[in-house]
Figure 1 (cartoon, rainbow, N blue to C red):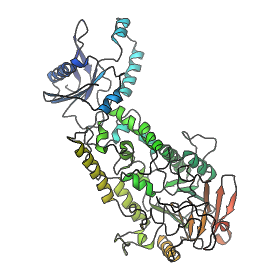
Figure 2 (figure 1 turned 90 degrees about the vertical axis):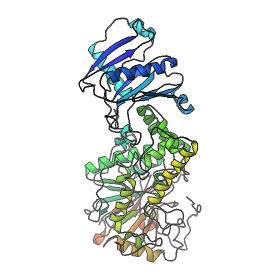
Figure 3 (figure 1 turned 180 degrees about the vertical axis):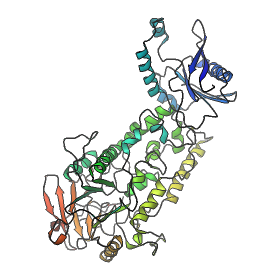
Figure 4 (figure 1 turned 135 degrees about the horizontal axis):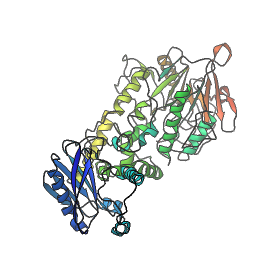
Length: 565
């Protein structure tokens, strides 16, 4: 391979002339060779391909050939043969009619863009079809169509230690990850918006938990989604409205990725329209990022497999990448882990908390110690520094692959080694997770605390809650008057602690309690003397004044259950 042409020998043992030479012009390395043949001839195929390409001046070629019955690899002339896993044999199935041979040079190894994608030396047609076709030469248009189909069908080369992201983005014929891309978030600007125009609308809704129907109902009720548009092609109808989703899109439902695609599409449209759709982290996003999937639905895991896992298998030409996750939902884990598939374009643009107008939004709650600029520590000794610093620490953590290199070829010697590697992968993610995302049940984290929201539909039981939230609001900004949170399901949206705490998680997901969706609306300076107007929007089109939803310590609407999640 001299950069301009490559001479490759093609071996067809069944043909009258078993050896033919093809010269490919302007076909740099690495390249792919596809071949058909009996499993018994697999090693012969590999050796012939290796020898001919090596003779064509391709420096230090590296060959990997896969069939249903064996795997042959050759590095600098040394061939090895091993049987694939039962999982891979089942995946390829009885309809696997051609063997795949991946050939590239060590000099080109590790490049994310695959070269020679138009080179498919053996078609997948049967010998009978070849004899039927005879000497009829395809037209130029047919050749171009075949070439396009081959480019879409051929697997991609990937450094065994590299991130998996290129398999779904720049190295693929389709950038699948673009569907989840959120507008870039500028820390200190997009997460702190105190200056709104008069009468500008701010709407917010709580936990979605993988229920696309509930999400759609939230968005239509908030008047930011065109009700005539579809989930696949949604249309933002909110204009300059700012919409805040307070976290927990993941777990308990079957449509988690579909929910994120819908939200991301609307977020991009909202930015262009002068509005915004902001996504916050919930504790379930943190759990998934740490490889903890105990709240995931089987249907949700199936969605990840169909949407993410199978695409990687197909583009990579192998499912060996799954081994490094030790069977613990590899498609889900690869998507949400730090440095994972969705880290850069989606998770890195989500926030822990944000200030919009006179309101601070967060998944579970904030305390003054979370927000003071290095002047205080929380009870665990972790220093926080304002909204911007919290969000910056979350972004820094989610963008870095703390586990180090991948093992995409699944090169493990024992089952114990597989399990140990996956356990360490999870441990290092949890160990490095910042406190603003970490914690657990009963912790003081912004994504876990319940001091302002429990018990549901009643005044908080923590006697210090009123003083705590008042101090947190002062630290959030000079004119911040209320905190909006999800996390703890309520019978309906309500306010507590003198209107300082708004609890908006209504358990709308069928995976939680199938509550009726409601949306909080805040009209900036929409009232007399420049006061904000707070309403609750219902699915039947009503606007209920916020003062009607204030709870007192003696008022009990409904006590559903003590949520342990």
